[in-house]
Amino acid sequence: MAARPDAVLDNALIRPKVVVTTGVTKYRVVKLNTSDTQCVHSGAGEAGDAVALETGAVGETIPVYLLAGAGIVPVVVGTGGATRGLQAVVVADGVTNSGTLGGGTVIKNTGVAGDVVGMIPLRSTSVSA
Image (cartoon, rainbow, N blue to C red):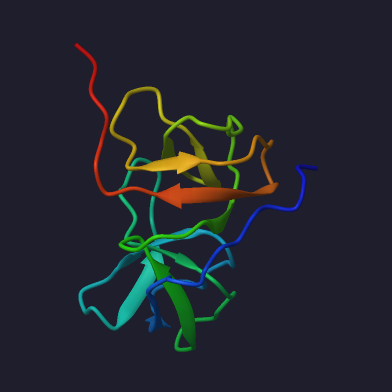
């Protein structure tokens, strides 16, 4: 199991969202649904808008960390693991290393599937010449 992840949420943009379609798991990446007041799990390969800070059943309101502010948010590592310093992408069961630049977020701690690690949300991407 990875070390306890950093969680620096002092300046985080945390908002309530209603869970729709299926239940949401704590520390999983979610996306906004048809309304900005609703959230669902992000699917494999989909971009996420936030991270669920609590587990919630359909119809429940949970706090989510919007990926738009400064901070470090805990996330669940998915199949493939996560490596500190690499950009992340959503997979079916969490986040893993992005094979290309432009993941939009950076993993702060290394972990294997099921671990909870820190993720630094970044809205800009890196390029190389």
